[in-house]
Image (cartoon, rainbow, N blue to C red; front, side):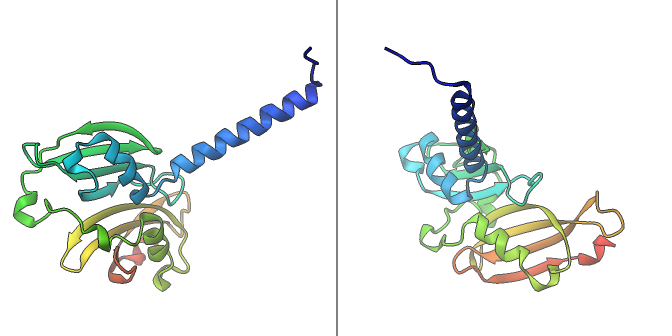
Length: 196
């Protein structure tokens, strides 16, 4: 025989369930680039799994963690040897085989060395954000690219900061280059004077 639960217990149970779903949604929103590689493997052929050529994000909105990501996998069966998986908030949005005609000429068609992928996107953002030149700035957004360079796999982190005279507006203040191997800042191309 079922007994009726008091209304407060029902409300409390619903609140706990909603909080759990919100926490789950937040965790999916904040998936790192390397976590998405594992997810992306589900949408590419066997010959492409873990063979990442490039990772890039769109500009983050409302936080420093981008939620729209593009992972390009090497695909020996595709005309331009690549398959791109687009993610939004941790969910697959699209799979396509993009036209990447110029990449073989500049070396951007080769897979990234997985052994040298030690610094994930969240750590690259943290490293770039903590640069001493940015101490007095309020950072609002970022965008990332992970590509092959002469220094090995490198994160390019583009940063936006609030303007000093008009805090409701943000401005692109430049790029930081962070090694995906050891997390060292390889180069700065910052223009903090743009916040004036």
